[in-house]
Image 1 (spheres, helix red, strand yellow):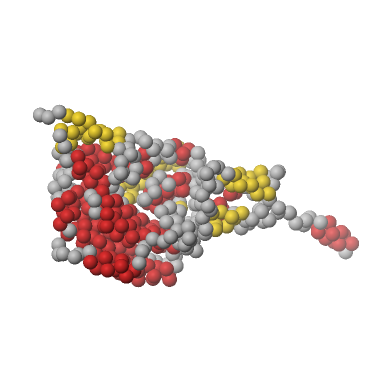
Image 2 (cartoon, each protein chain N blue to C red):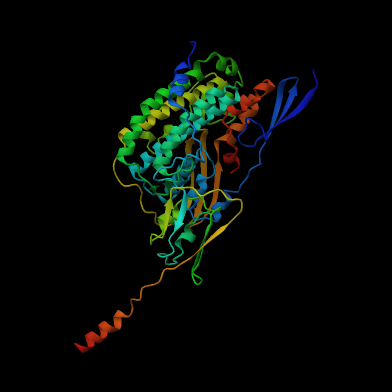
Length: 359
Length: 132
């Protein structure tokens, strides 16, 4: 047995957009063990719920994450609506779905770019981000913000998307899908990408399930678990099917996300076709008294907002379990036996979002 | 995978030109809804204080007696909740972003709204009623 050494990976590392620290125990170039530590950007957003009114906290919830911001707002609003028994209008559900799927599109395209950059394919990185930019433009045109939409509120949505804009979005989907398929083709079929990713960081189905993995990370290992199947917002009407791969390696995790991009485009198309006319919101009367576990499928997996109110306008407790926190145990399982040079790719393959994780 | 798979993309990029823009020279892209910054109209503000109560990040402060309306631009996240909540239309969301600054500067505005003198009418009507 050769001598073991420990190499610190992060919190500042070229492939990491956000700070997570891993102590890598190496034997020569092979990883034997990885010890993660987080806690570099804790902001205390859960505690802030005691200081902000429950209707105001939507803006705070949205700022938990810089990528899946809209879905945090949806998850939080859904929780309050369940506690207060508010019936949200159908059009608001559809608009929430459209914005959620746009967020998923831009999140996945961002990740595909970062992943391509992580494995050294810079051309593909720029290509992905160029496509992402057109999604951000649509988000800005419809909501006023590129990444923080600010359109979700307790009881509905704050803005409408006009019929003209919806038609324009629908028309733009076909050429956009064609470009995404050109991009996805490189990720799925290019030999260089395959050599780099196949058989790397393999996790089996049972292990992924036992470790509580969520989102694309779990689905790449064959766990067909997607919260959109339960039909929250308008997903129940859109005939959603989760994307599942079975090999459980980095290539499968990449493939799941590429195929989810296509699925999202499809969902947006169907949502625009079926969107009903009607009011955007209902007036919120009273204060929340009770508790609820609200769950929403984010680009990285399932997010949970636990909310508890005592009949005043300030909630007493919020607990937010974000998908990256659930995916760290499986990451620790993926790293042993990987080469040191492959560590960045394996770490990126779970799509870590540390700001979310530490709230 | 076949050879030259990215040729189509490369040709499209060559014909389409760069995706980026020379930012300070060419202004950033905005839309009609872009939340750039909050603008305040001191002539219509009636010091109700709803904006400062609604603000999720406590960026707005209002002093009724001194007729002062303040906003800390570094705290403001441009969510637009104050604009929605203002009953008098004194706040508007402008689409252009403010230039970057290096320190917390609190912007002061003096409220110039003058309450129209309405109550004078009443005694006249009463006296008219009495005379009739």
